[in-house]
Image (cartoon, rainbow, N blue to C red; front, side, top):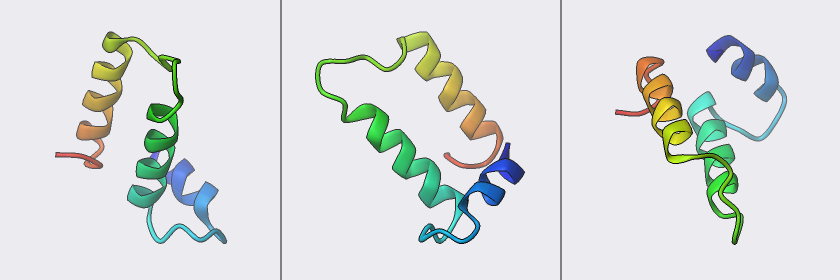
Length: 56
């Protein structure tokens, strides 16, 4: 997944994969009135990002 993110951000204004992940998550969470994913989905996502070293 990290390699895919690195490839996707190449040539963009994102300085790092961390910056890209933060941007995407912020956009998902700011959608008013909509829940982009369940609490269980959010828990799994956070666990995955933690295992990849993106969050503590």
